[in-house]
Image (cartoon, rainbow, N blue to C red; front, side, top):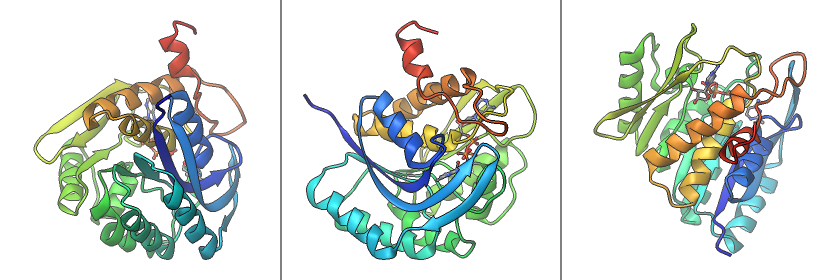
Amino acid sequence: MNIAQALTIAGSDNGGGAGIQADLKTFQELGVYGMTVITAIAAQNTTGVQGVFPIDYDGIVQQLDSTGADFQPRAVKTGMLYSAEIIRLVAAKCQQHSWSNLVIDPVMVAKGGAPLLQQEAVQALTQDLLPLALLITPNIPEAELLIGRSIRNLSEREEAAKQLVQMGSTYALIKGGHDPGSGMVIDVLYDGHSFHYLENLRVMTRHTHGTGCTFSAAITAELAKGSPILAAVTTARAFIQAAIEDELGFGTGHGPTNHFAYQRRQRGER
Ligand SMILES: Nc1ncnc2c1ncn2[C@@H]1O[C@H](COP(=O)(O)OP(=O)(O)OP(=O)(O)O)[C@@H](O)[C@H]1O
Ligand SMILES: Cc1ncc(CO)c(N)n1
């Protein structure tokens, strides 16, 4: 059996909707063998983040090296990296272990506003990690911090995606989840030459915890299976749309998305 391997370098969400838990569930649903390097443990639920506990630096070094010494991930994603020190370490280890197909989800702030990345780490993200990326997938506020200016409309989103490619990522995708209003939600992908628009109906729901993690994990899984970028992003967009639409309804706040939904639809189940 030829099963592709993928690695996620991210934080833990005990609630299971975001972070490494979301990544592993998504990898599994898309038929990819998932591995993890855990950078921090966040205590959280649908009402917010109650605590963040970074893993010892040496513990992260050893997880990266144990993985790199014996496994061959065909795609790697990063989520919550927390500090500049961890970002620089991850950049060095991606190079040392020759990991390609790197997808960066530049996780900065949780839905309720809790910081998941220290402020001074943004510079390390742009200088050390971004140039190694195949793809970076910021939401609008993350893209604003990365490029250092505000994004008010679609053309400014296009400009931001272009700038992120100039800053070193091969492709950039700016997600539209944070765009205010109803109607369509538009994600913009820039491939270095042209723009691709992923347009979907905005689901009116509060259950959007971990949408960014799940979406970037689905892209990573498809890349690990050998899909080209546009095909990977298109499948991942269908995966997250299904996961948001078929809501689980857990918790009193921002609940997790439904990682089962995409495959259930593929099998004709509802
Ligand atoms: N209400 C919604 N309806 C449909 N699609 C959505 C909705 N909210 C987000 N999405 C999609 O989910 C994906 C993640 O986008 P979003 O902008 O929410 O990421 P994020 O803020 O990084 O998520 P998080 O920080 O919660 O993990 C994108 O493809 C976006 O278009
Ligand atoms: C561990 C973790 N990573 C990412 C996010 C962003 O959704 C979160 N809430 N928790």
